[in-house]
Length: 112
Image 1 (cartoon, one colour):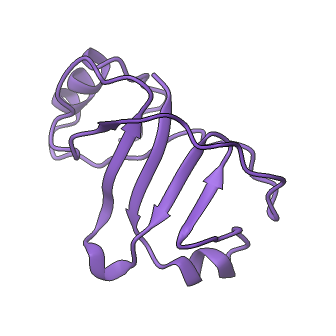
Image 2: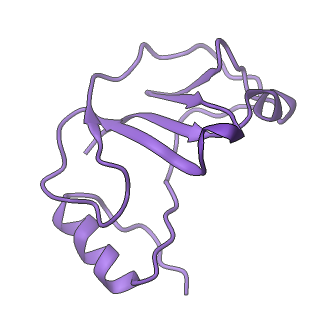
């Protein structure tokens, strides 16, 4: 399943200070657009989009939208070419893992 966009409660200036090429409050990392909504927008992951809909509910995570990947950005100042993973915290790890796998997402690593 291809991730195409993330909406985060994060400050664009902080990302720019960390070496990201922020343009209009967003960063394009490979085939994913990361919209930075500011810390006042909430906490953590505010929303996300995939190229095709997940096969099921995502156990408390925001309901994903469906949309195409952005045009690939140019060379990135800090060398990033893609997003490898998205981290989620859960009060019930087994339930969340089962829901994400049933929805078609790959479990890459588990940390206790």
